[in-house]
Length: 125
Image (cartoon, rainbow, N blue to C red):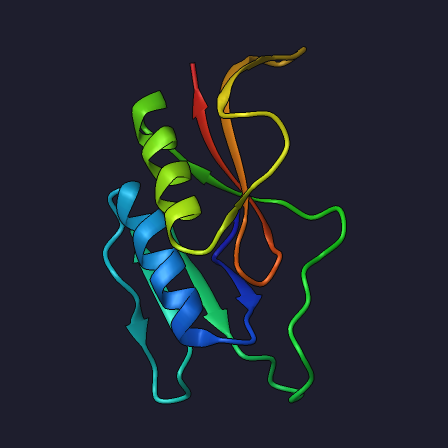
Protein backbone atom coordinates (compact mmCIF):
# COMPACT_ATOMS: atom_id res chain seq x y z
CA UNK A 1 0.00 0.00 0.00
CA UNK A 2 2.77 2.47 0.85
CA UNK A 3 5.71 3.37 -1.35
CA UNK A 4 7.58 5.27 1.36
CA UNK A 5 7.37 7.04 4.69
CA UNK A 6 9.44 10.13 5.49
CA UNK A 7 9.88 11.81 8.86
CA UNK A 8 11.49 15.13 9.65
CA UNK A 9 14.59 15.58 11.76
CA UNK A 10 16.34 18.56 13.31
CA UNK A 11 19.65 16.66 13.45
CA UNK A 12 20.31 14.26 10.56
CA UNK A 13 23.45 12.71 12.06
CA UNK A 14 21.66 12.01 15.35
CA UNK A 15 18.86 10.41 13.33
CA UNK A 16 21.35 8.37 11.30
CA UNK A 17 22.83 6.91 14.49
CA UNK A 18 19.37 6.07 15.85
CA UNK A 19 17.88 4.60 12.66
CA UNK A 20 21.03 2.75 11.55
CA UNK A 21 20.93 1.00 14.95
CA UNK A 22 17.19 0.32 15.20
CA UNK A 23 16.62 -0.64 11.58
CA UNK A 24 19.88 -2.60 11.61
CA UNK A 25 18.36 -4.71 14.42
CA UNK A 26 15.56 -5.55 11.95
CA UNK A 27 18.06 -6.58 9.26
CA UNK A 28 17.89 -3.36 7.22
CA UNK A 29 21.16 -1.91 5.96
CA UNK A 30 22.49 1.52 6.89
CA UNK A 31 21.11 4.69 5.32
CA UNK A 32 21.92 5.81 1.82
CA UNK A 33 22.37 9.60 1.79
CA UNK A 34 21.21 11.60 -1.22
CA UNK A 35 22.83 14.86 -2.42
CA UNK A 36 20.34 16.84 -0.28
CA UNK A 37 21.50 15.08 2.91
CA UNK A 38 18.34 12.99 3.29
CA UNK A 39 18.59 9.44 4.65
CA UNK A 40 16.98 6.54 2.78
CA UNK A 41 16.54 3.00 4.13
CA UNK A 42 15.68 0.78 1.18
CA UNK A 43 13.85 -2.56 1.37
CA UNK A 44 12.11 -4.71 -1.23
CA UNK A 45 8.74 -3.63 0.19
CA UNK A 46 9.24 0.10 0.72
CA UNK A 47 11.43 2.99 1.75
CA UNK A 48 11.80 4.79 5.06
CA UNK A 49 13.38 8.24 4.81
CA UNK A 50 14.54 11.02 7.12
CA UNK A 51 14.92 14.65 6.04
CA UNK A 52 15.27 18.14 7.40
CA UNK A 53 11.99 19.90 6.59
CA UNK A 54 12.12 21.49 3.13
CA UNK A 55 10.38 24.65 4.38
CA UNK A 56 13.32 25.39 6.72
CA UNK A 57 11.15 25.24 9.85
CA UNK A 58 11.83 22.84 12.72
CA UNK A 59 10.77 19.21 12.47
CA UNK A 60 7.98 18.07 14.78
CA UNK A 61 6.33 14.73 15.46
CA UNK A 62 2.76 13.90 14.50
CA UNK A 63 0.37 13.86 17.45
CA UNK A 64 -1.52 10.58 17.24
CA UNK A 65 0.73 9.15 14.51
CA UNK A 66 2.73 5.94 14.81
CA UNK A 67 5.13 4.37 12.33
CA UNK A 68 5.28 0.59 12.62
CA UNK A 69 8.20 -1.60 11.54
CA UNK A 70 7.75 -5.33 11.00
CA UNK A 71 9.83 -7.61 13.22
CA UNK A 72 10.36 -11.23 12.18
CA UNK A 73 10.54 -12.46 15.79
CA UNK A 74 9.96 -11.24 19.33
CA UNK A 75 13.73 -11.30 19.84
CA UNK A 76 14.15 -8.99 16.85
CA UNK A 77 11.57 -6.56 18.29
CA UNK A 78 13.45 -6.60 21.60
CA UNK A 79 16.77 -5.96 19.81
CA UNK A 80 15.15 -3.04 17.94
CA UNK A 81 13.90 -1.56 21.22
CA UNK A 82 17.24 -2.02 22.98
CA UNK A 83 19.14 -0.45 20.04
CA UNK A 84 16.76 2.50 20.06
CA UNK A 85 17.15 3.25 23.76
CA UNK A 86 20.94 2.90 23.45
CA UNK A 87 21.03 5.37 20.53
CA UNK A 88 18.99 8.33 21.72
CA UNK A 89 15.44 6.98 21.67
CA UNK A 90 12.99 6.95 24.56
CA UNK A 91 11.01 3.90 25.68
CA UNK A 92 7.29 4.72 25.86
CA UNK A 93 4.02 3.02 26.79
CA UNK A 94 4.21 -0.50 28.25
CA UNK A 95 7.46 -2.47 28.08
CA UNK A 96 7.85 -4.64 24.96
CA UNK A 97 5.51 -7.60 25.14
CA UNK A 98 2.42 -9.45 23.98
CA UNK A 99 -0.81 -7.52 23.47
CA UNK A 100 -4.07 -9.29 22.74
CA UNK A 101 -6.80 -7.44 20.90
CA UNK A 102 -9.80 -8.19 18.77
CA UNK A 103 -7.76 -8.80 15.63
CA UNK A 104 -4.72 -10.81 16.70
CA UNK A 105 -2.07 -11.58 19.27
CA UNK A 106 0.80 -9.15 18.71
CA UNK A 107 4.22 -8.53 20.21
CA UNK A 108 4.79 -4.77 20.36
CA UNK A 109 7.66 -2.51 21.36
CA UNK A 110 7.31 1.29 21.34
CA UNK A 111 9.87 4.11 21.18
CA UNK A 112 10.09 7.79 20.38
CA UNK A 113 12.99 8.68 18.11
CA UNK A 114 15.28 11.61 19.05
CA UNK A 115 12.89 14.03 17.28
CA UNK A 116 9.80 12.70 19.06
CA UNK A 117 8.32 10.52 16.30
CA UNK A 118 6.38 7.56 17.74
CA UNK A 119 7.65 4.21 16.46
CA UNK A 120 6.65 0.61 16.98
CA UNK A 121 8.25 -2.75 16.22
CA UNK A 122 5.49 -5.29 15.65
CA UNK A 123 5.64 -9.08 15.42
CA UNK A 124 2.45 -10.90 14.48
CA UNK A 125 2.23 -14.06 16.58
